[in-house]
Length: 487
Ligand code: NAI
Ligand code: MG
Image (tube, rainbow, N blue to C red):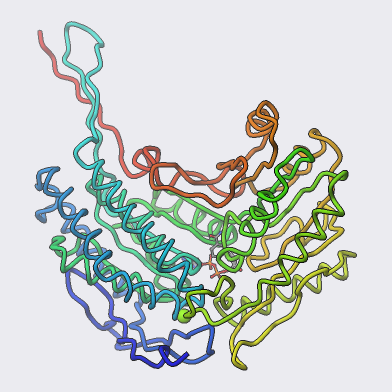
């Protein structure tokens, strides 16, 4: 773990095309979850810094070069940023792993390419966003303009920090908005680095600002700021609800991507080898700190015992290990609080009558770190708290069902609706169940797949609005109707 000792530069805010200290001079410390040691000091934005960033973003939106650029020029700048992220891939991936605790395999091989692809995908859209000419009457020439909303405030979580920068910033900039982004206080480093690269790429000052700081201070200031037109948030349902109420005062537009407790349904006719792999990556990828994690595994009664036995065998082999080791597949949870919350849920499960059949404990690596074992709770009832609440850790709740109607009923008996998995070799059943599940994403015979071209977002209390895909562009634009009298 000696690599951890390589210095990490202190983080500065990115405001108006410059890396700056907070106005107050205040900083906070970000930690490495695998060693419990401080990584570096990071500038801590106050309401004053948020205001500076919003002023810069407003000026860039209203009078800077940004709104006057040709679409092809904006496209070139986004593509250039993608190239710079790729060029600095090793450094950014390492920062992410040090800051978040996730395996370097995930940061470098999955997350980093996703960020690059996201900027490239939306760079492609810049020259293709168009209004329509609508035939209303010979007395008028009537058309629509698809225009940016203005200044977009992006508030992102700690589980996929750099991916979230791509998902929120790329579509907003592609559509001609400017952005103020607040990374989570636990994992600010990759967003600040991408903010620096945006300056290097030649984005005009104020187009993309990054304000690291507390949710209750900097985040709150963003949601209240009258100079921000839209908030795009990913995080907990509780904070999402609070943001929705606060945003009402300034009538901000909102995209909210919130929690989940996604059902991963294994029918008796499934390819069981594939389903076992899908159930495992569905919950243990990203340490289970994944909004779309397949955290409720629903298994048909007729294969239940065999399936759980195989799952337990696999989970027991998934020991937590040094996140910087390329072979590691289970890293450290992001913070001590998160670890304690997850272990608390394991206890809750025990008290509710579930059986811990794999893992369930903290397991230090090299004597340190906020690691939790790959955990399987057997005999869970869908009404238990461990079936209904987002645990956000490597803890799988396994629930039994009898037949397709019971599977669908239990899958939908929850307030969330972010994602679902269906494992079956019956094509008709696969498509029929996909329609009956109330969730924003349904994976059939696969799990946890994402692409910049496919929209992602929630049904029910998992939120509304979409990241990625053509649909996300609707959420960062507004439509103007223009009437021209021709008589
Ligand atoms: P959170 O929802 O508090 O944090 C997400 C972002 O919102 C962070 O950037 C935070 O600074 C910001 N924020 C917090 N309070 C705010 C406020 N009043 N106004 C504006 N922004 C604010 O999530 P947290 O506390 O880090 O994690 C708590 C739990 O939330 C986790 O244990 C997990 O269950 C869930 N969670 C779910 C996520 C998801 O993607 N579904 C992501 C992160 C957390
Ligand atoms: Mg950290």
